[in-house]
Length: 220
Image (cartoon, rainbow, N blue to C red; front, side):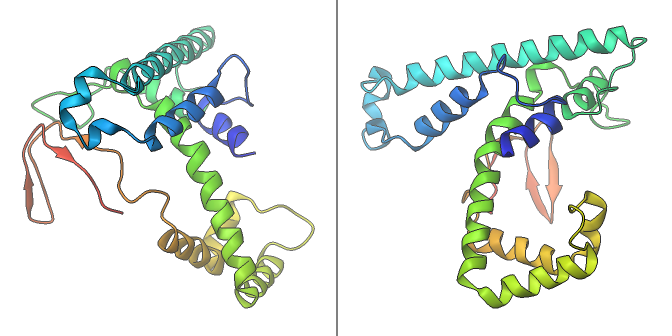
C-alpha cells in the first residue's frame, strides 16, 4: 500500500514493474545497517574487505539509471501535451517544471535545478520504509493505549463518519489524529538524524552562521 501511494505521489502512476525499486530499497537499507569493520578500523576502508563499498556504488549507479529513465519518460509525456511540463501533477513533474529556473529569486549566485540534484529517487526510497515503519509503530501504540484509540475512533466517526474514507480535506479538522501522529513521531522517530546536506551558500539560521559548502546534519 505504501509503495503504491509513494508511486502515485512521486511518479504519478501505480506500482510499475519497470522500476525495480523494491530491490534498490532492500539493498540500500541492508547496506545502511550492515556492520562495517572500517568504521572501527579506518585504515581498512581502502581495502573494502567486506565489499560494502562496491555494492554501494552499484546501488548508486542503479539509482542514477532509474532516475534518468523516470525523467526521460516524464519529459516525453510532457512534450506530447503541448510542451507543457507538470501536467502529470506528480512530484517529478513539479521538479521538471522548475528545471533551469533559479532556486531563489534575485539570487546573485544563480543556482539551477537540474538532473544532478533532483532527489526523486531519494523520496521514493526513504518514503517506502519510513512510512511503513511509522504506521506499524502508531498502530502498536494505539493497541497499547485503548483509551487513546477509542478517543481517536470517536473523532473519526463524528468528523468523517462511517460511510466514507478519510480524505486530505478532512485532515485540518482531525485535531486528535494530528496529536496522535505527532506523539508517535516523538516516541519513535524514523531516524535519529536526517540525511547530511551541503549548504550551497552562506546563510544564517537562528543566529548561527553556516558557511557555504558546510555539511549539515539535523538531529530530529
